[in-house]
Image (cartoon, rainbow, N blue to C red):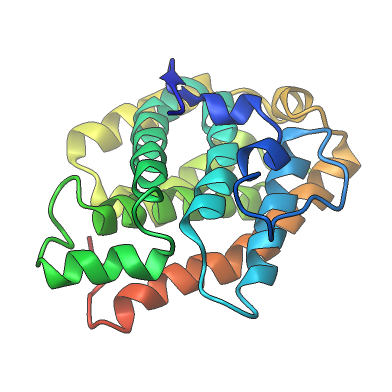
Length: 229
């Protein structure tokens, strides 16, 4: 069982190939020397898998585990989001021992009328999807200009993606913590990227994660489940 220490998944410490070795259809094809490159490659693999089959839960969780390192780089402002995201990925990884695809976990929870019940797989998947969307939105804002600060990018992204679903207390804590975010240059250094490569890898993740996020949304919409939660 993967262990979660200090809000960060131990899966992040492993290569993507190790994390997803249980799925023979998953193969690494490009360099994953940096956290962003590993994330981008993992979601590109997931996107390609959507072209021919349902999305398997185990490799999805492995890819999502790589995203948690981004939350750890964002510091105090996103500690709540990091803790929630990591715990939900962990729960889904455990569920992958019983359910092979994302469709299966949604079907199970619909059948038992527990889609929105705290701790249900469908609810956990919804929260993980929001985490993926938050990172995507932060990257999009970060790349709008060459001098966009991380604080501006994160504040805008959080307001769009997560704030509508958080309590006033959580929103207040997040926005207060924005002042402690690393600078743009500090984030690039933490990611082991350059001004040029960071944009390239962020764009790879943005493009690769988009069909995955849309696919997850469609799992709910196709079952007449609204996304306002």
